[in-house]
Amino acid sequence: MKFLHTADWQLGMKAAHVGRAGSRLREERLFAARRVVEAAQAHSAQFILVAGDTFEDNGVDRLLVQKAADILAASNIPVFLIPGNHDPFIPGSVWEHPAWKSAENVQVLYEEQPVKIPGGLLYPCPICEKHSGKDPTACIHAVEATGIKLGMAHGTVEGVQQEEPDYPIPRNAALRSGLDYLALGHWHSTAIYEGRDGVARMAYSGTHETTKFGERDSGNILIVDIPSAGAAPVITTVHTGGLTWQALEADIRDRGDLLRLREEIEDIENPSSVLIELCIRGLLSAEDRGEMVHIGEILSSRFLYSHVDDLHLHPSPEDESWVASLPLGVIREAGARLRELANPGFSGRRPDGASEEVASRALMELYALVRKVSP
Image 1 (cartoon, one colour):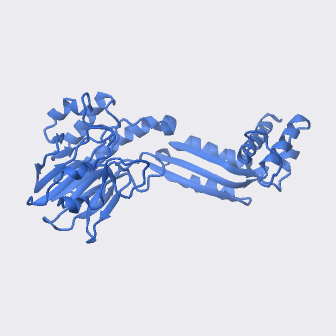
Image 2 (cartoon, rainbow, N blue to C red; image 1 turned 180 degrees about the horizontal axis):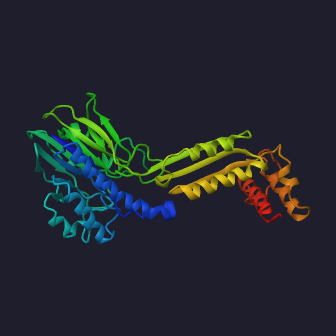
Image 3 (tube, helix red, strand yellow; image 1 turned 30 degrees about the vertical axis):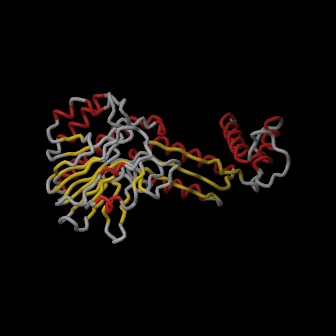
C-alpha cells in the first residue's frame, strides 16, 4: 500500500498578518494543492488522505470549495477527506456543497465507520465541532481486523504544548488502536512519532504551504509506503510549498556590520516569493542610519513581505554626532534628552512610556527627520 498523506490546507485563510501579501498567500495555497496532486502522481500513490482543515472555516467563498474539489478530482485516484476543527461537519458547512458529489473519486467521510481502501481499511475520525476535550481516535477499534489498517484523525498529540486540551490524542494511539499508520492533521509542522518499538506509525504531514513565521518544518506532504500488514511504514517527506519564510537576526556592533547584512539580504534568491522577518539588535552610529534606510528600501521593493524589528537597536553611546548634528534650540535639547533616556545605564526618573526602546526609536526618527528636511 502506497499513499499520500496531507492536511491543513487552510484554503481561504485571511493572512492578515502579512498585509497586502495576503492575496498572494491565498493563491499559493491553491497552487500548492495542485502540487500535492502532482506529487501523488509522481510517486505512484494509490490514494490520497486529507486529514482535516482543508478550509480556513465554513464561511469561505463557495467558489473556492468548487476549486478545491476540482483539484482533487483531477488526481484520478481515490481521495478521502475528513472535516477538521476549522471546517467541522455542521449544518451549512463547506461539505454540503454539491461539488463533492460530482467529484466521483473524492469521498468526504462524515461518520466514524471504517471504509474500504485499496489494500485495506481506513478508520476516519471526522470532526463535528470546533473545540473538544475528547480523544478523536477513541472510536477506532482495528485490532481484530485483517489487512493493512489506517486511521485518519485531527487533533493534538500528547506532549504538544497548548493552553487547553484540544482534541487530545495519546502518543500510543496507533498501537492502542491496532493501526499500521495513523494520519494526523491539526498542527502545521511535519512530525513523525516513533512507538516504543522504534517504528513510526503516526505522523503529522504538516500544512502543504507554510502559513506563518515560526512553523518549524512546514510546506510538506508525506508519502507512506506499507509493504504489508504489520510491517514498518516507510515515510518520505516531500516539499510542496512555493513560498519561503525567512527569519534573520543581526547583532550590530561595528562599522561594516550593516553593510554585510545588506549584502546577505541581497544574496537571497527569488525575493518575490520570500517573506522575511528581520530582527536587528545592537548599536547604531548616526553615519549608518543611511544604510538602515537602504536595507528597508530593498526589503520593501524586492520581497513579497518584510517586517523589521529594530526595537533593540540603540544609538551608539560613543557617537556624539547623534545630538551634535541637530539644530540648536528645542530640537537639540529634545535629542539630548532622548539620548539620555536611550542609555541602558540611565538611572534617573523616566516619564511614563519613555522606555529605553521607545527613546532609542524616537531619537533615530528625530535624526532621520532632521536629515530629510536639512538642505
